Structures are given as structure tokens and as C-alpha cells.
Length: 255
Image (spheres, helix red, strand yellow):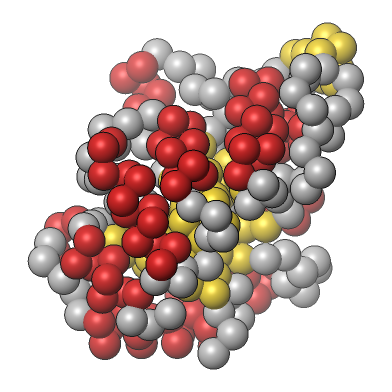
């Protein structure tokens, strides 16, 4: 088996537990911990990711999926460049279009081109370039970050579900993050004929809570089978979304 086994930090993890869970993730040998940017979590994502960075030394850190509409590309780039320096080059970023229902409730305007524009802007800003951009979603007039460009570039994944979003990833991204499904496997197979990108897919796992996440796997054997299935389909990374420490420790036996 060649697929890397990562996790998504539990979105119900209390803020004061993040450090302990981060240490447990590193001790269990997981490849990466993705810190989700969601209003369902009891913490702010960059604060949480900084906490993970401070309490670990080896495990890679992914931030996302985040979006360019609640977090402007300039703000994203500044935060990512800062965290990349703090964590010693372990950061990756995942950017997607966000949740339409939340934007409607929050009164936030979105644009179809926003994700692609954001990825291009963020990459150039992190690299230390002075950026000017005039697009449907964002207009920037000669801005440059004051943060020092990190020695290690920040890989930017695009969160893709539809074939159209996979095509967007091929145009601008360094990788693809998605949910596991047969459709995702088919989209990956088609996309990889055009350009090879690292691909990561999420699988939810909870021994105790069936309704934790859509399609939650509730036995270790089911999780093992899903990981094998994703490995055979050619995915590079599985992201195990767990609920609590017992789930984390069980998943850790598969690493």
C-alpha cells in the first residue's frame, strides 16, 4: 500500500484539547493533519493551525478547506506565509468555493472565478511578488506582503467535486482535495490523463457516532477496506475525518 494516511482534526475538538490531539496524531505516525475551516468548529482555523504547529515537529499540516470569500486572498497569503515560517515548511493549503447556504445567511457575495483567481494571487503573494490583478472576483493594485517569503513554497490544493472543478485544479492548483466516491475516482482517472497532481480524499470514521458525517464508516475493517479501495484507485492521500480520541487511536493502528 502506497497511500499516505492523514487525518482531519476533529471539528468538535475543544480549543484547549487541540494541542494534546496534535501530539497524539504525530505520535501515531499520521502523514498530515488537515485543520478544517468551518463555522461548525468551536475555534478559528488559523489559531487552531498555529496551535498544531507549536505542539508538533514532524507531521505535515494542511489548512482547509478554506475559501476566498470569507478570507480575502491577501489575508490568506499573509497567514499562510507566516504559518509556513512558524512550522518549518510543513504547510499545505486547500481552497474551495465554500458553502452557498452559509454565504446566503452571512450576506457574502461570491463569484464562480473566485477560487482560481485566489489560488493565483495567493501563490504570487507568498512568493514575495508585487501583485496586480483585475478579475471578476478580486481587484488588487500593486500589493506585496511584508512577510518574508518562506524557503519552502506552500502547495495549494483545490477542493474539487464536480468535473468542472477538477478542470480548474488542472489549470491552477498543486493538488486536489475531495470527498471519496466512485465519481471522485472517475474524475481523478480522467484528470490524470492531462496532468499528474497529488490527490487527497476524505473518508469519515467514527466508532460511536453514525451521524457524525455523511457516509461515516463505523468499523475499523470498513475503514481499512476504504483505504485499500482508494489506494487501488490511485489516490495519494486519505484524510480520515475522526470524531474523538478513541477514533483517532483506532485509525492510528492502520498507519
